[in-house]
Length: 304
Image 1: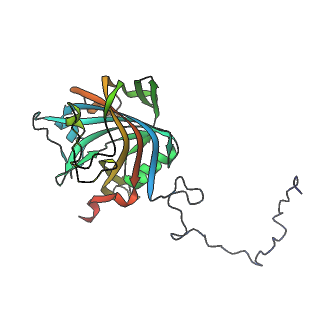
Image 2: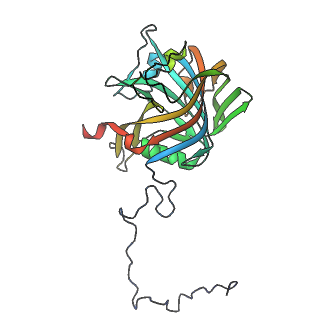
Image 3: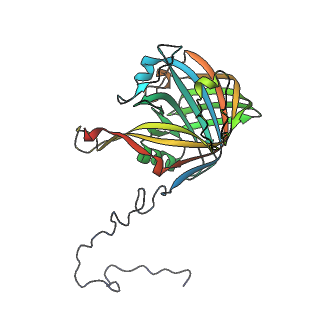
């Protein structure tokens, strides 16, 4: 019995089969469909909070020109003016190693552009790359982060990091830096502000004291969630500006010896945010969370 499996002969009647062959209605409904596709083997699961544990993140900060930055931003937002540097815009290059997450282990790379929406600061993500299909699909479907799959290499030897990314055989971004001394860690003090030296006071603004310890540092992200329709060039099915705060708990360190470079790729155009001045680098180690309840729709373009 353990070695032999009976295969039903289609010319013999199956037990419980109807007398007459008729269509059978499908069983998948909105009520019993899992959180993500495919219904019979979803790529990722829903959770009140998604977690990234024991992570390593390297952030490079640099200045580009405001016209190049604006070309990457949706029309609902503006660049973030720098009072002492008119005509410039800040950019963050973020490289991350995620060994333990709600979507499995993966690496990630993205540029982030500080911007303003109705007077509030957000980090807009024009493109983002991962090497995990669940993280790729979840990012696109939930937050509208424009994720693509790529080969991402982030290596650490002692305190030295080297980072590079390739897609379709083209290396289009790279970076290296040395981890420096501790800048600060969470929780933030209840009554005393954390003061950072240049350039970190310029590139990583911290919230003011609230009278209570703040358990994390929230980086508010913005993304343009565009899902195409099937009606031949008419407006997309979904067109929304989405926000969601990445909450980071851990230790933030400075960096030195930073350098970044680009390769020219029209499909992955990091080079279109050119480096006019490299400000510095930062390293983070700890945990990160994102709660679905804290995500929101800043603007629904299809309702206008």
